[in-house]
Length: 475
Image (cartoon, rainbow, N blue to C red; front, side):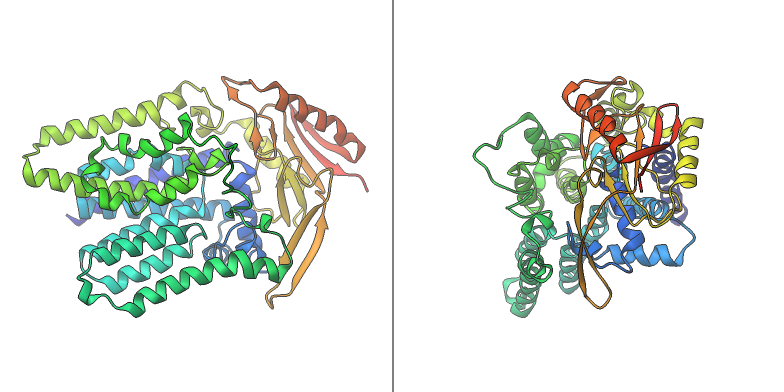
């Protein structure tokens, strides 16, 4: 029996690690946000701003410790960690809920969306699994600890934690609820929000634009916002569709994550409602648990034969092929999109050349502006990385916080620029629509090439190899 679970873990770990590592070696991870995260991990030990500027992410300290104490570089650390998290979670699902729910998890398109990029959000998956386990085992104090833990993944998950707390409350006998526990969790959530949105900006003298999730910033309500769009409707209903609507049999579980989905939908920024983004991590797990509970409810009333279960798994496989970005999906095989093509998992000699040129020509401690689609850092330790053209033509204000909490404000300019004309052009994190090897958005493409022309005013090209270039700022 134990061998079965160990084998399941090993297979998952291999798949979930090999494909992302191949994608990294083929230089198909972007500066936003993979490169920024790698850079933050390298520098978090001597710059505490990396934990609080942009997002509140205390778990970055964990990756910083791993970076300082292991032989791996930050990119390898986070990809290995991601594989471990997803594989352990999948094995736990197999152990607790059976093989149908297990395949629902590993074949779900949202699981493969997480593998398309790495973000700290992936940590919510094992935390949520522990939460539901402790609720099932009537260990409410431990469930409460899980709620607190998820609030420290990222500031937006305070909302998720509060609705987990509501679920926790409703699952208990009202007479057994300890008010001090409720007060503690609510107090912690309030402290995180007040510190992040009020205290921290006041301390460093920054505006709310430094916070990634404020209603002054990314989550801004606007009458001009497209409140209903095809993308938002798909984001709301796709988790249900991918699990054959079975989670509807356990609506009380879905309500935990529904407010988070609605928050993303109300945002002006449509990247939050992409099913191919890291924001789906907790949504995926909650719907998987709702599927498990719903399937168990159906099985208690109707006989589900092994044949029916195999049909259900076959449908999951079909959904993966038709709608996911996994290597076996139609999207990957047809090579329609650059980021999700099958060739993204096949490093070639040109990729190896680019990796070598970056390592040879850009020294440690540099400030580098990468074209968003050509990020690679290897064993180098850069001071800052930016998505081109940020930091190239105009200084960018930065904040550093040392280990004794002294705040330093300064302006930086990129010392090096990395460009590859054979990859999709981007302006910061906004790219052209790249389909079948060509850019369909001429406005972005033209602006990108205009900026490259302007580079000669302040930079000299020190490397040129088959469309790949490295520029160095003139002294």
